[in-house]
Amino acid sequence: MQANDQSDQSDQSGQSRDLPERSGSKRPIPHINIDRGSIDSGGMITGGPVQSGTTEWLKGTGEMCDVVLSSRARAARNLAGFPFPPAASSADRSQIMEICRRCIESLGRDEGTTMRWFDLRDSEPIDRRLLVERQLMSRQHARGRYSNGQGGLDSPRGVAVLEPHEQISILVNEEDHLRVQAIRSGLSLHECLDEINRFDDGIEEVVEYAFHPQFGYLTACPTNVGTGLRLSVMVHLPALKITGELEKVRNAAGDMGLAVRGLYGEGSQAAGEFYQISNQVTLGRSDEMLLREIEREVVPSIVRYEQHARAQLMTENRPLLEDHVFRSLGILRGARLLKPDEALEHLGLVRLGVVCKVIPDVTLASVHELLLLIQPGHLQHALGKELSQSERRVARATLVRERLNFESK
Amino acid sequence: MLCECQQRQATIHEVILQHGQKVERHLCEQCASLQGVSTDPHMPISQLISNYISGKNLSIPVVGSKDTPKSQTARSGSTLPCPVCSMTFAKFKDTGLLGCPSCYTSFQKRLSPLIARAHDNGEQHIGKVPRRALASLGRAGGEGLESLIGGVSEREQRLGQVRDKLNHAVAHEDYERAAMLRDEMTRLASLPTSPTSPTSLSASQVESRRGAGSPALEESS
Image 1 (cartoon, rainbow over the protein chains, first blue to last red):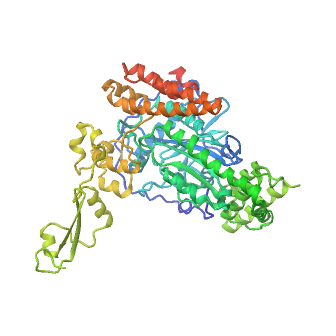
Image 2: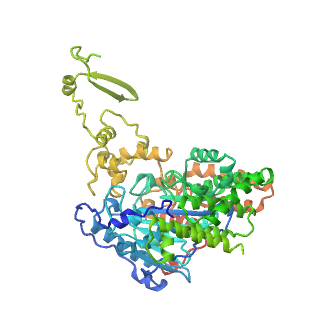
Image 3: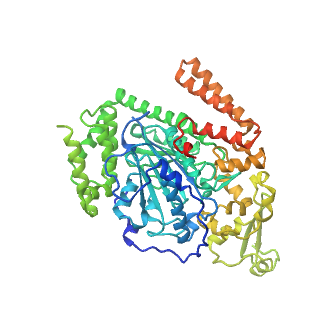
């Protein structure tokens, strides 16, 4: 999801600034077990439309879903014997991508699911944008530019998405060769981790991972070594904001070595009081320890804190709660122009009203769907054309107004 | 302030850390250049940082040195680039990105303290191990393996914690949680303590991590 309303400049600029790179020494492609691929998988569909309806992590179901929107886990993995993507030549990246693509193609899947492969070199900007807004890949991956300045739009890279639920996506040639991500609605980190392990094990049957006895799984950036695992949970804490206790949570999480970020990840602000809580440390703590700490200890206590604040508002200061909630609903039902942050802020409060059953005529599903559909890429996709910033504000306000007024009839 | 030579005004001020002690020096330009202290005011900050990190004028406490395999210490202290991808440590300091998996052994000595700092003093990987690495480590001897999967002491500690929680859950009649904790204890206890053969270890390790839901992948392999 994009927090800002600016169009992605790098997508328009078009030209890659790949510096002259070392000519990649040709390595033989490791043996790949093609037989298995053709037996237990129907292969992979290449290209095609990115889905545009609501998605798994916005279902609004699962454990503690009144506070927890979604859980996400991702594992960073690299192939042994190849340079990491930011330092690799374009030729190396192509070769790595081919190995990874064929490997993903060979993975077994559940019946009724499709693995779809997007080669991001020749993808449409709108597709890249949709993939980012649906949290299936990072913004950095859309741009193809690494933090060391290498790469660019035509840098060899791709993403595989498990459809229709989009619970799994596998990024190829992001900062690491492979980043396997699983996402679920509600508090469900262990399921995400199980899912990741399943794919991780499957990939490892085909390729050899870079691993070090002391440092664990090796990654381009040393901050990810060890398990290579990032677990994150998206929580909605509007009541703690109203009662002024939010800072306590932020500080407590920080003390426990957890990062607190805005809804859209690194560097984004937290409009609407949606926060992502994730681990920073990946070395010296096992996946199980990390999982237990976040899923069984930290998040439940934050959830109880928020629930307590909501209950307190409901019993002791209901007019204050209702005032916040209905002002926001009023703005969303009446506005003719909406900026993204403004829309998010008010949707956050409307969500609070829905969960606390103060607003009877709006469903959680429609609030969640709007969180996705108000983003620039989804707005443009729905209208089938490029929109300027002011056109997007009109389109956003129109969409929100229609959805929220329709339900009241 | 006068220079150490007591003749000219000191214009170069250097602060050195020697064995944790701060040592200040105040020199004039002539003395500074004689003693090899840089007087170039336009030295870029990244250069300053890389000089600092590469160990000039600084003794970095090497936290992870006891875990460093002996075979790698010889070249890991040098300023040579990684022999595999020719990444330099200075370039790594600039970007925060390493060039290839071999960089971790090429720069192991200097990376260890930085990594420990970034990971809340975590120095040793614990947790999932790729099966191929598990097999080759098993052949090389079970010593490193023990620490990878948590070690005896760590496991005992974890078992103790789970046992406490289990007692608490039973006392509060939270039987669902108690059942979950009991399963966890069984799983922890079933991890092998001293591997007899690499194959038996990897099999049980893999099983304990994969759980019941192993996909069709297993069957065809």
